[in-house]
Length: 114
Image 1 (cartoon, rainbow, N blue to C red):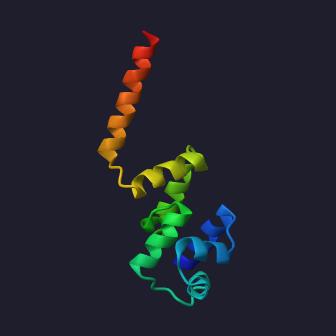
Image 2 (tube, rainbow, N blue to C red):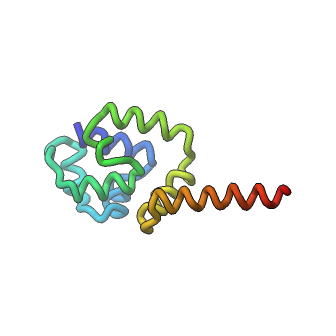
């Protein structure tokens, strides 16, 4: 079932099998066997790479219900916002640092209005 979810997400993103494999840094042949449910027990490292490129959590690849709830939540975010959040996470920005930045921005905007 993981393979079918990966394939569904890949197609939603408009990636070919080769594109996803290249972006994630995984073997195209392995990805293909995953999508066809020939290989059904991928490593956590493989799932991390695929989930990152597809912009979903590892849990959503494993649990179909999580994927559905993530899809609903993501409807509120466009791809640019989602990519920005992922980029911040990968660059080492913590949630607390991000919250502080938002608070500072709100404070700054308030001061500019005064």
